Length: 139
Image (cartoon, rainbow, N blue to C red):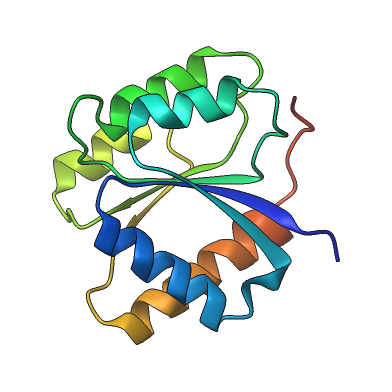
């Protein structure tokens, strides 16, 4: 099976560590995880020479450039507009969910606080978006 590339965009080192641990415990060898600690860093990665990710997991609440602004930038560029972007947030506010979809999110997942449930969520997201979902070729 081809290794899938995932770009995790989150400014919280604890949440990044949890996600990386979840991928590792779930046999993450099928995925190559890159991490961007801010919106501008994520856009630098996406505009760089490296192959595009198969999936972007994007935190909503980040300083300087929030997830919606990053999502707008992703959707505005031909090279990245069709990439699946799943918002991964602690917010369960109806407005945040609605706004994320209005800006072009492919999905919205509320981060579970329990590690076991968080690991299950990462597995489910990856299984669908990085392995089962069919999408146009990009890049």
